[in-house]
Length: 155
Image 1: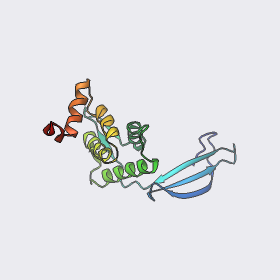
Image 2: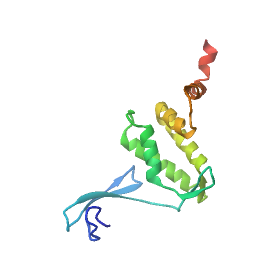
Image 3: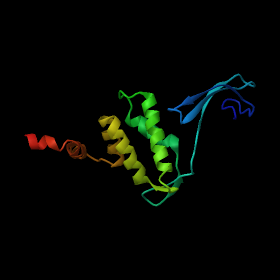
Image 4: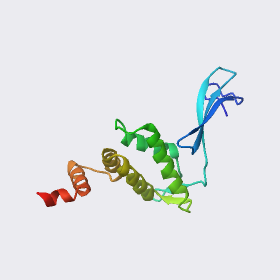
């Protein structure tokens, strides 16, 4: 593994342990050339996934991009980091086990929304506002009212 600080290709593993509910291995590494320490993660990758964007463009699936968008939606929410990692790993496993290497971006968005809805409704609405491209406050009102359909019947 190349050192991210000096580029040395001869780094040493100092500690390894399971991570993300035993679906990854976390390794603490040390670079003897510069003394830098860094962490790497190893995960099983069943197949290379390609995302088909709504405009037809194709791009390689990027787990860190998925992780960033989910973490932004969950920012300042009371959800443990381990739970977030488990959810992301579960989404990736689900995508890999779909049997297709080409996956529509809409399918990924729906799976993420479904997962967020089970964990935190505020994060679900945040993600949906970007995913569904809300343009006005009315879009939020309509979406939230669909989350609580029984409320209108009680009034």
